[in-house]
Image (cartoon, rainbow, N blue to C red; front, top):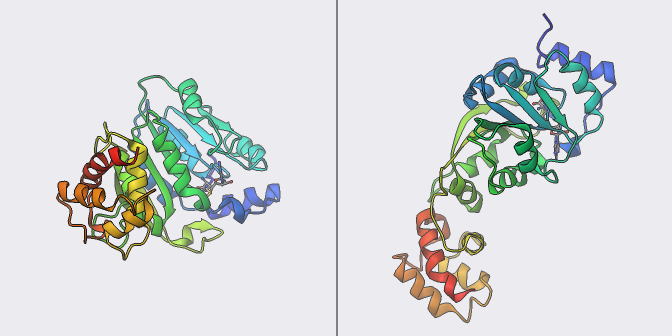
Length: 292
Ligand code: SAM
C-alpha cells in the first residue's frame, strides 16, 4: 500500500523528486493533511456513481481522495510542470482525467457533457487558487453546469462574504450573486498549518448547494446584477443615493427611482446592505422599464 499523497513526508518527497518550486502567482498552497481532505470529501456527499470536478489538482492530494469515492474525477490544472508529477502520483487510479487548461478559459460545460452521463450526480470539489476564487465560482455557477453543488476551500474572508446574511457587515454583491444560485454555508474553518507553503490568510471550506431555480425570478438578470452592484457601490450611502449616482442616467431618473422604491415597500433612506435578495428582485423588476 502506498502512502496518501497528502502527508508532509510524501509531499516533500514528491516535491524533491521533481525539484518543484511553488508559484505564488498561481495560488499554489498544497494540502498536507489527510483528515482535512477526508472531511472535504465527506461534505461533498459523493455516491459510488457520482462524478467529481476538481480545479487545480496540484500534486494530486485531493484528486486521490476523490478518486477513491467517486466514479470518475476530472481536474483542470493550469501549470504544465505539474502534469508529469500527476501522472506519477495518480498512476494507481484509473478513473481520473486531467485537463491541462486554465479553468477560466476552458469550455467546462462542453467537457462535462463529454465526460459524464446526462443524469449523473456531479459535484465540484476543490482547494481553489486564492487569487481567482470568485471568478472561478461565478463562472461555474453562471454557465449552468449540471452540478448538485460545490465544496471548496477558499480564503475565510471570502467565505464569510459568500455566506453572509442581510444586515451584516460581510453582506454584499458577492453574497447575493452566489446565494441567488445556491444555498451557501461555511462548513469548516481551516488552520494555515495544513498547507505547504502556508498561505498568509485564514482559510475555510464552503458548501454551495444549487437551487433548482434561482432564489428570485427577475425579468432581466443583467439589470438585477447592475442594480445590486450599484446599491453597494458606497456602503455608507443610502440606497437612493447609490442608485441615483451609480445607475446610468440615475440623477435624471431620481423621481422614478423613488417611486419604484416606494412601490417595493423599501424606505429610500435604507442602506443596500439591509435589503434581502427578494427585495432586490422586486426593485429590479419595478425599475428595469426605466433603464432599458
Ligand atoms: N488541490 C491541490 C491541493 O489541495 O493540495 C492544490 C491546490 S492549490 C491551492 C491551487 C491549484 O490550482 C494549483 O495547483 C495551481 O497551479 C492551480 N491553478 C491556479 N490557477 C488555475 C487556473 N486558472 N486554472 C486551473 N488551475 C489553476
